[in-house]
Length: 575
Image 1 (cartoon, rainbow, N blue to C red):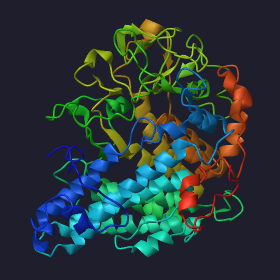
Image 2: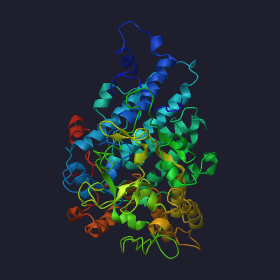
Image 3: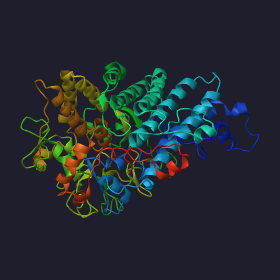
Image 4: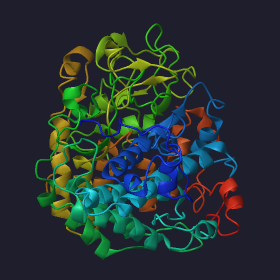
């Protein structure tokens, strides 16, 4: 089966405090299933697939597990929509002002992710009840530990201090007395690592079913979490990075070793990672992806509805598009290159990008749709400075993200209208380019600068050749592509700056940016420089200010604090 995320065991109730056996027996008349039948491989497989499925069905337009809703806090994107009141709680996060612990969006993402973890633990509970005649038992347990780590990872990046449901057999009393500060920040990352490492030791190199993680996916996941862990933020009174742990960086190097990634590599063109056509799904750069589908027998299929707010409002085509998550001018400017074809590390925002005079990295035109250029490379839909391309009348600019959207020519096939717009395009969670950049970052922090630059250049070589969709842009629209490689030697500080910039360019609008800024300890410095510079492009930023030791993490939701029986501790600098 190609799309493991499609198959959902409908009707399985779940709760963090009930046993898996009760969950299954509640679905059928009493006496229908014996204990042996409940613990059968077929039921175990059904619970495993149900655990996979919730990572698509539990998210929605306001709580996307891609985290785009929460990346509006970064310098990559504006919230978008029709104005301040359209998604007002996300406006508060973007401005870093007026955020309340009672805001619905903060509790909503918490609940959805813990519901996902509950279903994963229920699958683990049933798997542990199966005897060894179930030959796939250990591999399925490894897959579930991978998913449990994924859920905890998303939560920890958002909230920092979280309760870990890292066992399937908690008693009701243990749940009632759970603490979100049982582990230090550093220890919390290790809890996640422990689950991934258990998965890594068992998972095969190849999976027959797309969507199940492989050993390479687990290696990539380990590298990412070790990189987060390396930047210690264990001062109880702050969110400051107090040190960078060499042993963790060395683990990043270990788990990004090419030996784990045989058969994987960079796509010839970065845009191939963001195409909905079946032939581009699960390509060589995709280490693990959320699998979506269409034409699978259901009304709408297993479509990705979580991007439903991002589609622009094209009259007669995508009527009802909401135009959220709009690229910032600052991001566009970051793609400018100098006479040497390299990023303008410190001066990229000294002027706005001008196609008539500026060189640009080709990735700009694969990431951001701009007035004067075709939307999704289709000349039937030329972008203009009109309300079609900005529901706010330009208050959030006229740019549109391209990595999340689909060519309107594919309407009805890969772009589907339901309650909102959706697509069956996969969402890559771990891609090989990120692995290379994580390896580069670890080398840079370890002072092995030449190795870091070599990896950055590998990314930049691919960037320079990513022109299959835009090859006519220089002649037709007068743009100047120029993305060269770094030459010579660089000191540690400059190399780190180079790697950070390359991460921004390569992963732009993939919802990594804000979390990178927090991980590095750069959020306050970068964002408080960004806000005043961006006011001319987005006047709302006149009220924005990032408060260090507060804005890095979401507050623990008020309803969760109240339900914790006094066992949760609110984050430092609570709003």
